[in-house]
Image (cartoon, rainbow, N blue to C red):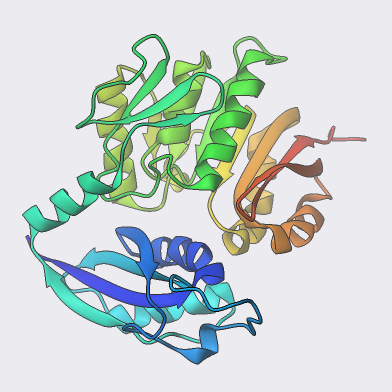
Length: 303
């Protein structure tokens, strides 16, 4: 089955946010690499004033994979709107199935997250057999452990589940992607883990990865999620969807329960904190490469 490859070159400061927005807009995967300024897709509207000395690798090339019949212009346009920028120029090409598999596998190696978690792609050997190894095949879903937003939540989950106030806790991964956060929670000892996503391909990737790791997850679309609240809720998405999801995530977190939000740029942190302040006591808990994790505790119903 052929795929659509969409290539665009961006100011490096914008690249990670646009990468996640492309996935939210419908891209099946996005890879990033250095690109020389002036390459394909150059668009001055993406550049902020830069008074630093010239550098040969100032820009980042994004290559998004989409289904063959996807509307590339609509996908790029939505991602740009979500990031509050003008739509960039882009190039489109056809990619055959076997080429995409080789490209994907070449991108990912085992990654250490937190103190004892390793994310091990299914085509690699575990570098530390005694660690908590999560075998992962991202398939067509976001979540490989390579992005700072994912690493931030994994480290947070490791700390929370080691010091859990409820033993063992119930965990919800909202917007599960490949299922990496749900898998980590289950392997770290959670009593019950639910994983939900709007994207059917994400749910299928999560099922595949759950089988590979020998864990049982409740995997379902959001509208089919069982009623009830959870002790821990995590959502690694993007700031704009997180604003809209606040009532849903609040309703799924028990009073006194814990919340972790990621996919948030440092400049967006105050707005996210304000959006969740009515239902949570929350603060920025950690940061990495310009991304932050917002963590909170659900307020008591009659505080």
